[in-house]
Image 1 (cartoon, rainbow, N blue to C red):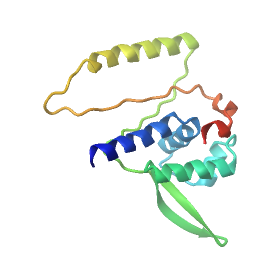
Image 2: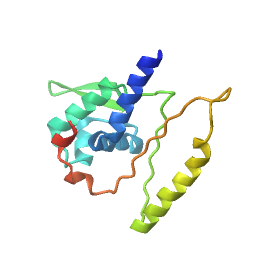
Image 3: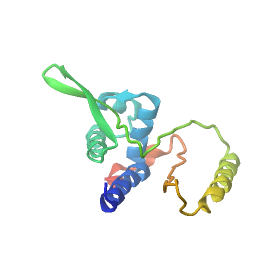
Image 4: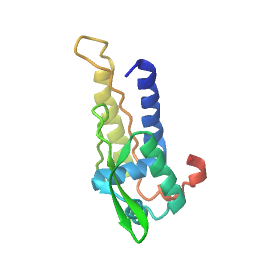
Amino acid sequence: MNEKANEKANERVMEAVFNPVRMRILQQFLQKETQTVKRLGEELPHIPPASLYRHVNRLVEDGMIEVCAEYKIRGTVEKVYRLKVNPFIKYNSIDLYLKEEECEELLQAINEVLAKYSKNRVDEGQALYRLSFALVKEGHTEDITDKEYQ
């Protein structure tokens, strides 16, 4: 992959990770390997079905998820999706129960650990990794209107 294409792929990943609706969809794949839009809708009831389909399609277009199966159900096709295997992207999700001050402590500790590695410079055998994460307070993404994140 040339540098320009690599840069465009990185932009698509960043858009997915920092779009709160698409992030919530990706988090569902970390909890259960395969998902249908119907199942995602049950887990994310605050997202209107049309918006959910649009965001799932965008994740497919951007190469973040892929169709792994299709089933014909009463004259319609239900697609089953999974995270697309990408050797350049590592996914992880963990649930944490924190008080506000504990959350701040956690972020400070993460920054301290990352500071050690951020001082590295190009050396043989090293590759550039871009770490991006979002710490999302559960129950607060329902307030986000989809129009803000189309």
